[in-house]
Length: 416
Image 1 (spheres, one colour):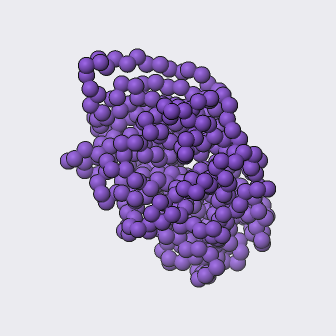
Image 2: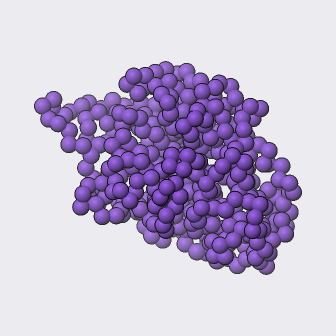
Image 3: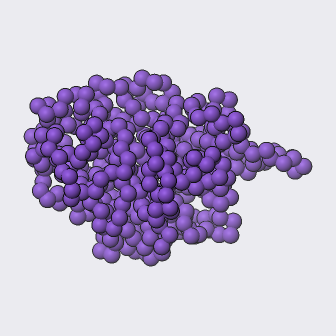
């Protein structure tokens, strides 16, 4: 299991000074007073991550490295960077989180948990409890991201293996299925008990529906509610050139943030949100013409963003390191687009949305950029790094994972 043990070279009489930013802030552009360092490099295809009370970072991998899918990164000498690396968990996936003395992690079909000991370490990494199993995995949108409330529940995204629930997926001229049969087992958020074993569709609860795919989700303690970021649909111009030109297709539909409630319906595949018209528009597969709107029936988003940026991480910041304006606001990791041609690909940054009393209170802004390494990205493979997951450290620093090169960034604040 052991991959790397680095020696602690800090003399016992010296007090570690804590993290300091790398020269050039590890290539990132940040607001004044912030700095960034590389906490770790080459961890694998790093998806979501979690940090325990002692600052140990757990990273979920999309592909196995040395047979394992969870990497454990420890800063032994207190310089703010990982110098010990271990791994366990022989399964791939995206979701990971710490709640009430357990580490939870997901594969593409299941949710597992590991008991933490008094040192906040996984007590028995070779044996996991199976909390949920048997969830749908048809390759497309199969990551099972996780979030937790404060009442013993875990929320699991089950993405729809489809673009718009057509009879023939991603096929020009194929009509949408009405009703969409995928919504019985996918295209929404399911609620399970975080402390019960061997759950599945039979005893889980479909908490919210009409969500094509959610990779970033988090519980907002001020609102006592789950918030999610939806990946919008594709191919408007490809399939309906008579209704949408290439530029419209590159920019539509909006990526959307929803505040969920039990029984929420956000409308996929029947509608999408047009951020320019600021309306819920009937999807062309269901008789829409790019203008026909729906005024009720489906939940409205609470915030919208440009199309096809792929929001893969959502975190409500509750730490004390950053200035007060960031407290309880939302950080969003945009993984970057692949289908905005002929427009340049966009995203590849971390955004911030200010919140007040559990609701957005201002316009979104780019918080951290530079992950891609250059401005003009023709294809996502051209990006040097692609932000994916977000986590908050016990000191209030912000961790960002990169699922292309496996870099784990740590963003800190020093008074300017």
